[in-house]
Amino acid sequence: MDKTERLFAVMDALRRHRRPVTAAALAEEQGVSVRTMYRDVQTLIGLGAPIDGEAGVGYMLKPGFFLPPLMFSAEELEALVLGARWVGAQPDDGLSLAAQNALAKIATASPEDLRDRINDTGLWPMAVWSRNKKPMPILGEVRQAMRTEKALTISYEDEGRNASERTIWPVQLAYYEGKQVIAAWCCLRGAFRNFRTDRIIALAATDQRYGKRRAVLEREWRDSWQHDRWFERHSETGDAVPRESAHEDPKERPEPSEGKGGQPD
Image 1 (tube, rainbow, N blue to C red):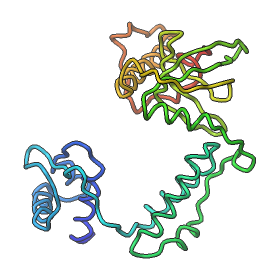
Image 2: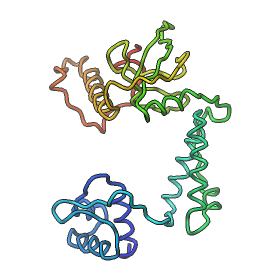
Image 3: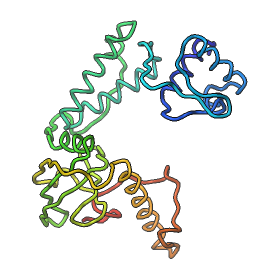
Image 4: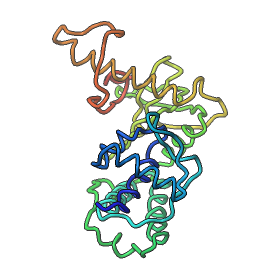
């Protein structure tokens, strides 16, 4: 990689970080020395890049800065196309259309017309439900609820076909092969629960605000999920410990399933 390519790569790296990143971290990512990275950052600043920070503290791009359209590498383009095509196969019409529009914008906004390359990457996601997918409008309503932090009321049928009425605060929406799961705070249970969208009989938006910011709820949900999975794995061997002592590498967390701790609600 020559210096010009490296400078663009440094800008891309800074754009990915929302908090200051040290020269050491940037240097490791780019495969150069820390001293070289300091020089690269000073070069970028001299060229007018709006970089805040200093040596020993870290660097970040000033808010509101956008890089001009750049060429994508072959792998970057393949990743974008494959991801967009997978989203396009989902029964979420809003995201499906957005994925198609995003690819069109990428193609036309680039210095080189990429439409031919986008159509000929040779990569397609194998979504078994995409051919006969049935749109699920509630997915858009769940995403809207998460953006606005407004509660939803649902009529839900659990695994035993028992129906209940609930008010929920959606925290996460997981898209699996052929199904979707909402992770939410359930006001009826006073705890986090996971709800399969195919078991939601009815859903309605409300003007009721979440009791906490979604970012806070997300952290609490992850902590609860981490503990429940840890306890499940160790309870059978007699190694389980109280909640405050449980620890697990977040990278080892399994996928969520319906209910709490993998059990039906």
